[in-house]
Amino acid sequence: MVAKVANIADHNPQLRAMEQIFQAQKRAYAAHPMPSADERISLIKRLKTAILQHQDALVAAVNQDFGNRCASETLFAELISLLEAIKYYNKQIPRWMKPETRHVPFSLRPAQAKVIYQPLGLVGIIVPWNYPYYLALGPALAALAAGNRVMIKMSEYTPHAAEAMKKMLATIYNEDQVAVICGEADVGIAFTKLPFDHILFTGSTSVGRHVMAAAAQNLTPVTLELGGKSPCIVHESFPMLEAAERIAWGKCLNAGQTCVAPDYVFVPRHQMDEFVRTFKQVVSAWYPTLRDNPDFTSVINARQLKRLQSYLDDAKAKGARIEPINPANENFEGSGKLPITLVFDTTADMVIEQDEIFGPLFIIKPYDTLDQALHYINSHPRPLALYYFDFDHGRADYVITHTHSGGVGLNDTVSHVVVDDMPFGGVGPSGMGHYHGKEGFLTFSKAKGTFRKGKLNGAKLLFPPWNRRIHQILFKSLLK
Image (cartoon, rainbow, N blue to C red):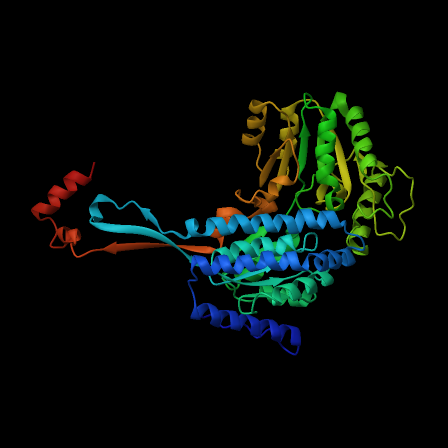
């Protein structure tokens, strides 16, 4: 990579430091552009040890950022998921790195064709605030497995988590291998303007557009992990308690602040009352109180809380019915929390119908036929996830093949994200590109085709002058 880094530092010491790290990683990559499988595995194994040693500090830091972040959610959804991914990548790296033999056409034989997978170089990862560890280190694992250097820009909304992770990674990596960048929006903007070899961004669709525009100035390829309005569909044959529990799990996790959390659910019209009653019972049993309950995560900050409340105010003013699930009838003012809130009778002109919710609000919709629900989903932007609840394999296959979404969960929500051996990524407004698993390795690798000729050169038969007898024989045999 020889492009000159733009002079972005000006008089800001954070920007100067970031540019210096970028240049140090460039030099380090140029000096060692193809680390071995053993070197990559060693780098990744260090991360397991660090996570286990720093887990208490990581949990405490993100809890401080949220005001209250359920410790078990941080352990399960972030740290344990990362430990499982580390095991998976270390097992697969040697196999993925092997050159692949490809077919050589008859007219070019004797020769060999192979594909080798070469590190791209420097990978920039832009991290959202909702899962700061998993959404930073998950893509970093894929980038390291592919042999790259990594710079991670953490969200300004989670400064304590950013500092905790920076401190942890500094114990196992030099900054010319993996670096954590902290700072406000100006640092993030400058980060996107660096001429990385690949940028992975996780966040909102609107910010994703800006990231892509900035990357385009350097022709930097991007992977965008965005969001959208992920739907659920409950078939009438599915046990209602099972549906309520499995959907509530995905909606309550991190108080709905998950890119693949259900935004709305389609329920058979004649089962609406049963579903709502059961869903409320499930949530109330899990969270009999909310305000001071450490199991129920807060909304990240006052800005996001105000945004969610504005959705409810707008929907109510336009005729929606609002039903918070608040079993202890608590007052949440000043708590930073918002209960799981059901929203009925929504219309297309409501903001809650237009924007990704990203919080504990949940739209309930009736449907009369499965095709009616699918038509609604297909007439809207393609979501990051779709969830269908039905034990009938034929109907499930029909839903999968008659909709577009980044991923599908059958009879479950959210969990598909942590299946390391499947690609994860959006489609259209919910994102572009994939990572996780082998697809992550491929995303951060250059698949380089190599063609090798030996001492015997069969192409001599094709040398000019043309229209010799041998040409006529070859053309006659090959033009079939």
